[in-house]
Length: 145
Image (cartoon, helix red, strand yellow):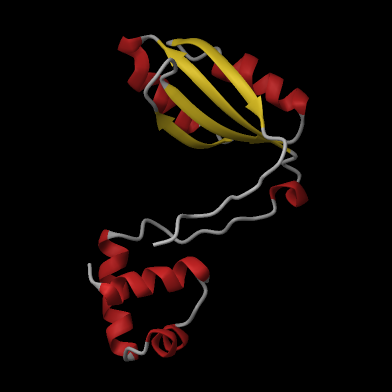
């Protein structure tokens, strides 16, 4: 990865809908170079193109971070099961007192309670959890390159 590849990634992070010709002008590199580099980046570096909606405007009022302790021999199973839940947007194995951190999006506190008590706690291997409700989203972005 060189400076041109990094410039392409920075450009896409700012605006994933930018055209190749706009990127070419911005980076001062020919369209063909941008196109070829982009194809290589899409194979090796770029996992997917996505968007960040205003979750509240589409009805997902509650964001919660949940930290989970697992039985060590069932850790992998718990990660897989959590990853299958549609309300869960992120799953991380972490170090420290807890083993897994997840981020969930739900419509209401009642839905959060339902998710925790009916789905998450029922996963074999979940020992304990602590949930935190996000009060304010101060920054939600990708890191700068």
